[in-house]
Image (cartoon, rainbow over all chains, first blue to last red; front, side):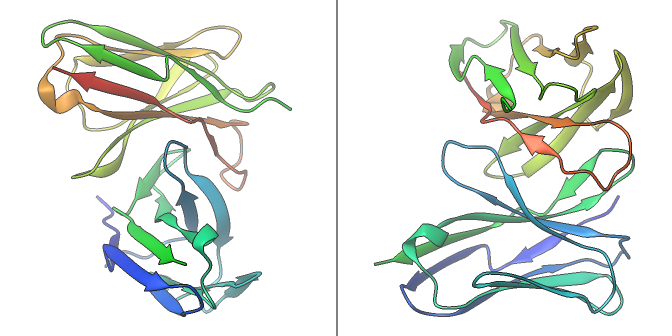
Length: 110
Length: 114
């Protein structure tokens, strides 16, 4: 069973600060996805990383896939209150099955 | 293009009862997956259906079952409800072929067992 460990579990910061959340595993993945889930809604895909060492940017969000394809990070620059939510990493566990980390709950205070 | 629709959004059931949740995938999508989300365990895969056949199954007891209809709509059923079944149940829609396609989640059904 693939296990994805996310850290930190909770993060509360002030608007304008930078932050990084991590997703680690002992398994090698062919790809890894990051989702954001807002209260009362389902997760929404932010990005898929496929190649070891890959870096993808989505406005103020930077996603990196580790060289060994066992870990990933999400960095947010100048966080905004609208970034508040649960950030989940997920890996393909076969067919359309996704294995999720438990998530990082981010709160950005104005 | 309509998104993934789940009904009901909220429901309260008593221990021992059974519940049926419904999911309408995005038009043209043939794969429907179900996930259970709890604060303690996070998101856990229940099962996946493709063209009316169960293609994958997670590690949940037999009380959890599902089915898919010819129009790709899916239902999941939980029998003999336990307090620990209280969770957000999420349905995910996917074209069904090729893992590179995006999976779209519905807003979920909040189940409270009392």
